Amino acid sequence: MQETSDSGTAVIDNGNDRPITGRVIFAIIVAALGYFVDLFDLVLFSILRVPSLKALGITDAEQLTLVGKRLLDIQLIGMLLGGIAFGMLGDRLGRLKTLFGSILLYSLANILNAFVTDVWQYEILRFVAGFGLAGELGAGITLVAEILPTKKRGIGTTIVASIGLMGAVAAGVVANYFAWNHCYLIGGVMGLALLALRMGVSESTLFEQTKAQSVAHGVVRGNPLQLLWPPRRAARFALVVLSAMPIWFVGGVMFVFAPEIGKAMGIVEPIAPAKVIFWAYLGVVIGDVASGTISQFIQSRTRTMIGFLALLAASLALFFAFAPRNAETFYLMMSLVGGATGYWAIFVTTASEQFGTNLRATAATSAPNFVRAMAVPITSIWLAMKLDMGAVQATWVLGICCISIGIIATLALDETFHRDLDYLEH
Image (cartoon, rainbow, N blue to C red; front, side, top):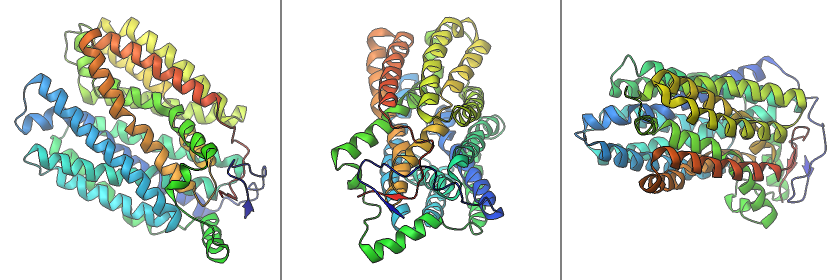
């Protein structure tokens, strides 16, 4: 195990001798299926917001938006806190134990979601589900990143993210054929079924080495305060989060409030949330595969992310130029915007690569959930801007601001494609 300063500098390419065995392949498959279930459950509320709230007696259009935003905020705050908690546990107890606890918690919460009879019950269960959902992606990506050779790491994490994102597409399909409460039951049961597969996955060797070293040499593991100090490390974490913030501007505003945006554009046919999620995440999956492939080809995470941020700006312009024509064009353009956010796989890989083994799960689990939680202030700003500008102009202006911040943050990040992950933070 290497020792480093807080800058995170590591020796290059010492991890290329890690063998790709059957157990490694199985771990990648299970991590991918775990993220599939995670995304299925995560986007369900975006799809089921209107029908579920109407079933609880809320029918006013403005209240559907406001109560829906509050529930989304509660879920995202749960994810923020869960990301910190499960990240810390991932570095202290292990990547696998974190995955077990995460999937059990959000699966049970989603099953109970099917039986809510009042908004306050919905709020509690969306918080619990969000808290549990927070642990899946970071722990899975950290595990896969640590067991693969350095040069193959991006391929493995892209497979996990791409298959996982199909869970959102599946949610869009399922919501077309089942009642809202049955959709929650399906998601919860799938999660519990996945627990059986988890039993055959082995713990990361790098984590076991760090665990042994922490006992012998007093290495601190899983302390979230280490992300805040020293300042260089705090800045590194902030840059990681801001680099992906535009993704959840799209996810938190454009995907969730697509019906309101479509109405403001003058589209006569009501925009269906399930169709938005299906077409948008179909684009995201294609974008994720493309970003992972491009990253491997040019051997650069940061240049790939910059390219996709530029593509996101262009796709946003095309969306507002063509989407108002009709509902079918709206869905098609939403798919294009989704594809431009497809650097999520590269982002989560970068988040895991930026920090040492004793802090990696904490950072890799916290970062995606900090990004998701950014949707809370972003949607609040959007709603405030919408009152003065209207939904269309507010979305355009806020989107360009978010993309600009993302580009600046990405330019300031260190390139990590060739970084060996066998190092520590001090």
